[in-house]
Length: 295
Image (cartoon, rainbow, N blue to C red; front, side, top):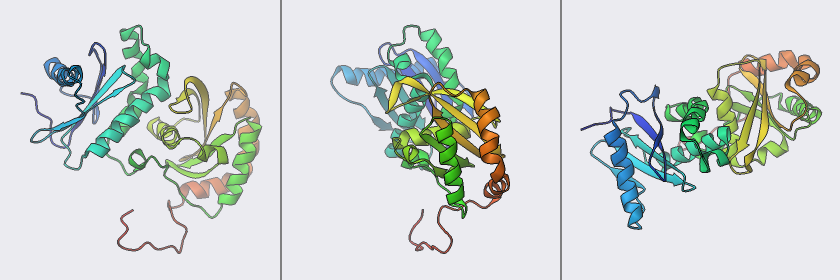
């Protein structure tokens, strides 16, 4: 009999039609020990058995483990097992939604729904592992549950906002924001109009990747553009602070680096360093919360 270790979370991804396992992840990366195939088959089999009888099985509990199933687009089945005492049907359901949206963000909906080569899909899904693993780990952010971006306030927001809007316009983009340690300092008006899960995922994606001077990644917006990719550009202005943009095919990353990043942001270097090093606050100074408010 296989049992979950205390406070563990294990995620399974299978094809809905045939039940072929695509990946298995747990806190800390690849599940160790790997779930026995008999357990994977049983978890998927009981769900398919109910489905054949027009019974929708969404969640179940054992003495020490909570299990939740969710099928997406009749193509991908996600199953999560958690022995965390604080796990709830809401948090596990939100976890499964975030994981599937992360898969769409990296690979696109078409690749997941109409996969013709399972082995190739397994290989492609490895690109999603870092982002998926970050949702499994307990952290200091709650955006994965609330679907609202974590924000930070700074006295210099007006100056940064003006520069960001000019920079985004020069890059032929309407979607841009400044991030400091995973929190939004300021953003363009169109960025705030992104669907909440999309904006959260883009910020979370940056946090899940190792630091880098610049990036040019194709991303799919799970709600706004699940089948047509956009370019996602990131530039580290100072350690801990990045500017990110959603762009079309132009300008190139090299052009952005050589002709736009330095002219726009170099004059604000001292301000950027101060913003990156300042204690992060989500409320303006002088505003006190009632003690009954937890967060």
